[in-house]
Amino acid sequence: MLKKYRIRLCLAAVGFAAFVAVFLFRRSLGGIRSAVVPAVSRFFESFTAGEFILVFAPFIVVLTFIWMALKDGKDGIKSWLVTMLAIIMLLAPFLGITLMSNYTSPTLSERLGILKKPVSAAELESLCEFLAGEMNELAPSLPRDANGSLTEQAEVDARVSVRDAYIVLGWEYPFFSQKVGIPKTTVIIGKAMSWCDVSGFYFPLTCEGIVSSDTLPSHLGFTLAHEAAHVFGVGLEDEANFAAFLCTRASQDQRLRYSGVINAYVFAFNALYGEDPKAAARISDGLCREAVKDLYDLDEHVKKYMGSVTQKAGDAVNDAYITFTGQPAGIESYGMVVDLLLWWYSNQ
Image (cartoon, rainbow, N blue to C red):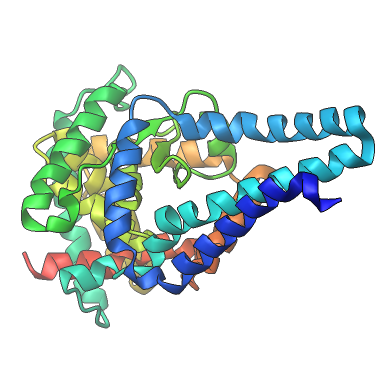
């Protein structure tokens, strides 16, 4: 009975053996990854292939199952299962290279020589004051509509700014000198991502960073840079946030710099508020009206989707995935960037 499936079973066996080899040598995949991921990501740089795979692949899988079941009955179902097994096993070693290596290679902190240490409320306050000052300097000069909200930036301009900033950052940190494809915004699933509380993701099948088209203008540049960090090979979420911040600091584009500052401020402010609410309130009161408007717009944007079933489900899935990849804090890992921001600030 298995003879007619032997080619697919052999392919599955080859894929499984290759995955075992990748898993056993998972801490030595840097060279292979640096050759594969940049090339694949650049190939898919002009369109969001990963988005279309996510949307249409489930339908194709279900339709082929129904078609084969109706056509050949039990034999058709068996053939479908063997085919799916072969495909999954053949993809497994590739995913080991493009995804697993993000979490088994040296961390960004190790690459940059960052040593985390306990921080005080006074250090947090100083960081928040610095970031608030940067916001007050940048926010009034950015283009705004009649309501005072930031106008949307053309995606191509934002992507070019992120690419150029990472080129500059690569001069200081060679890890970022890889020529990777810069993330893109979605065509179809932007709103759906917002309802699931997902602003962007790295898609390992096509090595793409994909960002929701529903992202606020104040956060577009930072989110593009964050997902680009995953393409570079930064797996941990706090480190991807830090890489995005470093990227924005290397840019001459004031919108990208502001995107980095306002995101860093939100993380730092939340941490300070937990330690010293009065100090946090004092700093917040010192923000210019343009910065206050941007934070208000962010709050209103978040409220639109807060508490929905899809938002809770999205958070649960994201939390489980992040925890599975060795980040026990789950979705709280994003906010742990504050320790890295403090390291950066103390070295300025």
